[in-house]
Amino acid sequence: MGSKPIVIGIAGGSGSGKTSVTKAIYEHFKGHSILLIEQDFYYKDQTHVPMEDRLKTNYDHPLAFDNDLLISHMKELLQYKPIEKPVYDYKLHTRSKDVIIVEPKDVIILEGILVLEDDRLRELMDIKLFVDTDADIRIIRRMLRDIKERGRTLDSVIEQYISVVRPMHNQFIEPTKRYANIIIPEGGHNHVAIDLMVTKIQTILEEKVIL
Image (cartoon, rainbow, N blue to C red; front, side, top):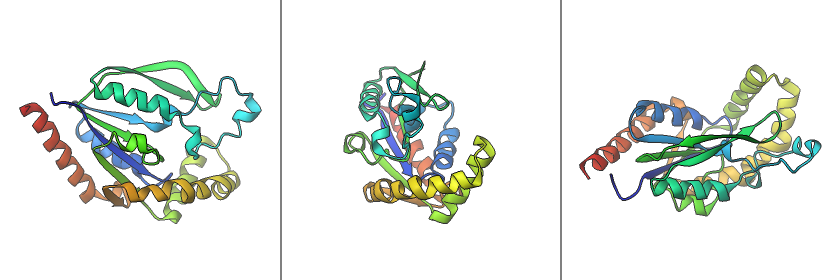
């Protein structure tokens, strides 16, 4: 076991394919010493906030995330200590009472739209990736997902995209691309980039075994 786990940050806009990239890498190493932490689990607890105000939550803004808790948990994992990962209840728009026990591993993938936005998180990362996909592809993917999986209407998806998702992407997500060590175009369809990352992680894991 090395001195500390390796942390890989994977960011990108909604519908960019960052989740596909993350899953492809994670699935390749399933059964090995690797774990996934999704930033989406770390939305702020809003138990004290009235429901009508919770419904107005802008989930694409940096202030929606409890980065203090996320950073605290990441530091625990870096010391090979287990954490109690929170669970977010999207129906109630607040944190659930449930938690997920996460055991430390040698490689940690931290995935989310704004994982590169907070410099405190970036400082914990050894490799920083940004999945870069054209806006028209991202909005189409979001439409298909929200209509099929979340029962949304086309009008509501378009309205949300124009009023919230697009401006938040341009203001907060897109600028974090400059912090990335590697920019991956086309998301999960970029098999060359994914294979390169798999090879890199494989090398890290082998070095850990040798150490």
